[in-house]
Amino acid sequence: MEKLILDGNRVADSIKGNLIDRITELSKKGIVPCLATILVGDNPSSKTYVRMKGNACKRLGMQSIRIDLPADITTDELISQINKLNHDPDVHGILLQHPVPHHIDERAAFDAISIEKDVDGVTTLGYALNAFGAATFPSCTPAAIMAILEYYNLQVEGKHAVVIGRSPILGKPVSAMLLNKNATVTTCHSRTINLEDIVRLGDVVVAAVGKPNFVRGDWIKPGAIVLDAGYNEGNVGDVDFNECLENAYAITPVPAGVGPVTIATLLKHTVDAAEKSLLR
Amino acid sequence: MEKLILDGNRVADSIKGNLIDRITELSKKGIVPCLATILVGDNPSSKTYVRMKGNACKRLGMQSIRIDLPADITTDELISQINKLNHDPDVHGILLQHPVPHHIDERAAFDAISIEKDVDGVTTLGYALNAFGAATFPSCTPAAIMAILEYYNLQVEGKHAVVIGRSPILGKPVSAMLLNKNATVTTCHSRTINLEDIVRLGDVVVAAVGKPNFVRGDWIKPGAIVLDAGYNEGNVGDVDFNECLENAYAITPVPAGVGPVTIATLLKHTVDAAEKSLLR
Image (tube, rainbow over all chains, first blue to last red; front, side, top):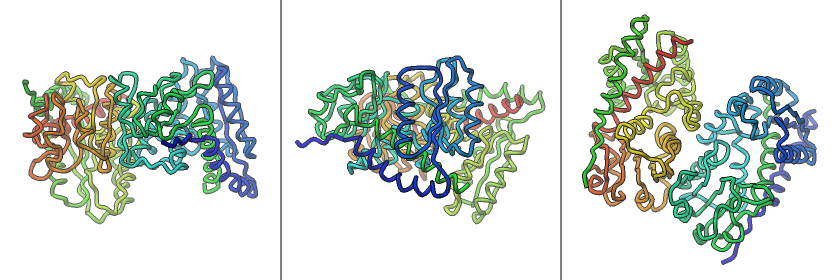
């Protein structure tokens, strides 16, 4: 059987290619789409992610503002920073890098982001709008997974999709988006019994576990589409790629799978937000 | 195998029994919990539902206000009625009877209900809070299903729950609530292929289809728990009760299954809202 390696860089380039003209048009109106990223503390991975996102903005001629806050900031102080950005007309998108230190109420901080600037799709209201098929900015990684399926014209309607993971910005929203595309969706998690047997039912499998090489080759139904949203230390996904390639029809690698599309989606949302700001 | 007929009236009585003291306490403070129900048009089933809810309030010593609006009211007019109730301090809960006539933007009307008074759990924000396990008032029918499971001490953790239906006030929220109780959850719908085979995987099956006797006996895994959220003309559920009783371990009948618990849940939410109003 022929295999399809789902090339995230190709999908990302296609998304970014569509943005260039729009960014040029905006600049004629004196607007440079601007993403503000907030980093609390100095987690090395988080620093890398934030830097990657900033660089990605620069390469497309977008602006990025980086706000570094000390690890011992309070929730209130963080929220007051977010509110400043909410009210800054030159900022179109706000990204609070996840995870924040434990003493911070992350949910409260996420929900302080105004819905118009929630380009990372992390607010509670944004989640529900997405689940109801009405979100402006769905969470970026779930949206990236859907963009990969769309780019490669892989239909999910009527198919059985198995999502491993139920986090509010990944497992839950990707389950909702697959459901809205008429897949039959099973959401699994750490308490799932007989996980392997359930994954074997999947015509589409999304791994969002956060454990390196967690999904094994013999869990994959022959001909399935496998999407790896994991990104663990050492550039390793949640899916054992070599093993799963055996049974899968289509599969995303790590790196160069879901990751670059997630960043491209974030840029797209920021440009969308900049365009919408003109209408207000 | 012994069978367990899940008696909705018993569960409802237990919920309502807990309310009586709370209503007495509130009355000492000069507060009578009050539910406002809005009926647009004169759909006979809707009229019956609204009357049942009003009567249920009366029997517990609660107040109910009924607002009847003509079928040709506009969305804006309906929303302005809802806003009046939002601002009325004597009204603790607001229920807009579903469905409204087609020309009305039902989602906009639902979302006009203030979150503090959304005792029926229909707002977009309320949906997301519920999905994140943080809702004050989850949708009543899903909450009723969870209350039945709890009353009979039926654990769902690790079990495979299959939900048939994906509406924003039933299939989607009950899927989310089962997931939050650590079930592995599959959501099915009209586009699901091989529905019967998928239902056969269910240790727990929730039918929320709106088609009489839709779920057949041989779809049920031996020993499964079957919850019928359907309520079709002639007091018929979505589950063929007699057939499904064969394989099921526990099953809700229609009538006297999920229905009375849904109403009891609505009353409980209204009392909750009245108590919370004291804190504001």
